[in-house]
Length: 320
Image (cartoon, rainbow, N blue to C red):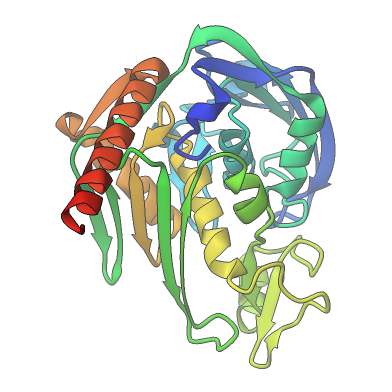
């Protein structure tokens, strides 16, 4: 899952067959055609812009290649070619356990679809995910890493359970203060996070469009809020959908690490800039993490679980 799920298995995975879909870019408003192809082991996730010269078209999905974080995550290469709004697609890939994929796109922005990762998860499930029989590696957090930007902060702490806690606070009464913690095991990403939609405010819409942003936004692909609350006639998918979507964004942005991360992310008022800053801080401190095979990660998790069970037995014995 986000930081990955041992249940998926210890081998790298890709999709069983190509996936094709079409959608609208949230900010550009352009129609975009997408083709997702299986990729070899150890290739990771890569984007190919089909509308530029082939020699300039490839962009590796990596935290190193983040060139902008204004309202979305934008990746770029040395030729100045970019691809934006990658976070929902990357979250779906991480949530479905896809390690290797080649993504062809006809434009410079990934389609927003319904504003969540759920449509992509459904397409991946339909295509199928296959093991490539090559060891998968993860990033095991050994010591805390923290970044702060004003009142915002993110802390990545050691934890044998892949976990995210997100706290948000907005003046709009429909959002207010929300806090959600999820352990990303089994199908939790699919059932609890993937369908949470992006959101925006009616009061900011005109200014955004004057800046060439949110040109493709509509009630079909975002939750819109005004002074009276949620504008969308269908309402919310979760009472705390806003915080859940922030978790989705964190998952997508942290998927730009070189491997799934095993730890507890505690993010207070997170955003794309903060998420990327956390990865840069993490990889600047090589003593804070260890790259391990999933076999070793599973052994560490098992030892942690045995230690917990032993401690519970001690507590039970002490209480008699």
